[in-house]
Length: 189
Image (cartoon, rainbow, N blue to C red):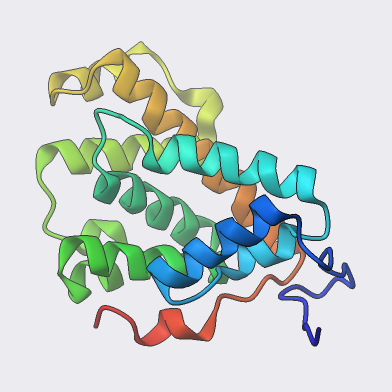
């Protein structure tokens, strides 16, 4: 199997992949038209891949008071602050697709404040920004600001966890020079 690792590290993908992993990759290929490079990057260690995908799937796809678009918006706003090329490309595409608005995806990539957002989205992204830049400064007034625009305490938990997850993944992606799939660049424009 000819395979170029999507990071600057020489970590060969397990070959052959376990049946369950191969099935997951096949589903990605079928639904997305690609296997995201982040999954391929983790495929050198199936336990790490499974831990990553379990957390991602729980935070981004499980039942939540946050819509999938809102969670993707958090991913892009956090990734913009951290200047993560991989996540800005991949999650910017997801925002374009989910919103049906290519301009929204681009605005969030550059500066989320340039976007015409409602009070709920603005509070959510301001809180996510604070989690990213100075989480130690968050106080009850910040959480109250989220409650004031309709977020429940469970929603606040989800906002904090999605922002925290992307702060972690941004750092791993940047530190390993993880490259996004080329296909993301042209999708949903």
